[in-house]
Image 1: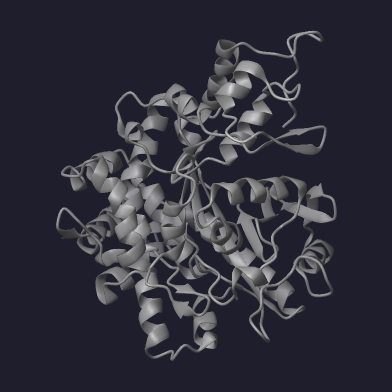
Image 2: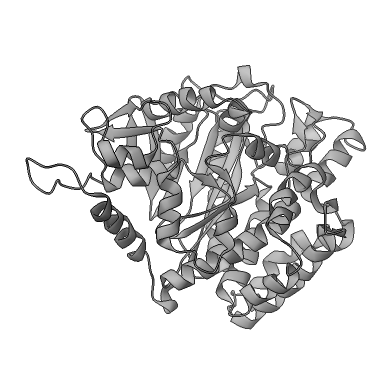
Length: 462
């Protein structure tokens, strides 16, 4: 998106009230008609060489760029965003394949879909296409929340101008920043809102759903080839990094949560960078967007595009764009991805979804929600809140999600409703009574005997 024009050639600045209205209008423009609401997915995964399990680079005779070029040549993908020698994004029919913060990661940013049937079909096509093209170069892809085999020093950062600045910024913040940028991978769900009130309802519904989804799909127990002591090491990483931009906030749950309150929250977060005429510029430490709006920086003054870039670096578990994004879940094997989207669709688009989750968490206070993520990182479904296992609550959630999806009466060609996609995760919750990460940790130290090929077989794209 191009920067907004200045009010006049001699006055590039907006007042605080003018700029706030520009941003609020931007969010209002995201409102959809009820009949037009859809759901989308973003799926990150790790690329490794099959022969030695090392992370792939971007450049070179068997790097990710060669895979991109192969997909353009044979499958009709087109480069739609570039930076220096990097192809940052490919596009085809509304779907995008994008680079992430390390050279060995790839993300599918799927089209938005009216049903989980359509979403699952796109994922299946992508899974097959990318794996077939990648095999030409001896590369395979893993759906897991943390790259399980390699140390940080072996994983190359994505050194585009924008990410060079981000690396330096987060390095100064400390914490587990390098694990976050080089090793973490997630599955995200994107949903629509029909009004500001509806956005609040869906935002808060996803907040209440988050600890349970985090527990079910905790799937990053390994670090550098050994069990880490966490079921989701990725979630541990997220809770240890820059507290300004991660996690949740108490006011997110309040009845008067609005676009304006989200705006005010993001104003107080330090900025990372701005872009002008294709060039990225680092900014002084601790320059919040509020300060940038008040006095500018180095002759720059805020544009709407600056706001979009800035909030892209706000990593709360649920965040507002022109849609609502749930960013909590670890990357998982492709078999389980439609079930994440199915649970989300069930609760945010069914009229009783919010009520059901409020009932389930009626004894929880904000501290319970906040501390739940630390417990989930360590214990997955065995984590307890108010003395009760999340495992038991997740069984209730899956039964409710099944009923909600069935009530939508959306069928595939086999006359199956959307609840069919919950079957894989139900096997773990009701039969094994484990999260995916608990299962992997037990297998790794048990029947798999730390054999990397068994882990690869479990979580590879094929």
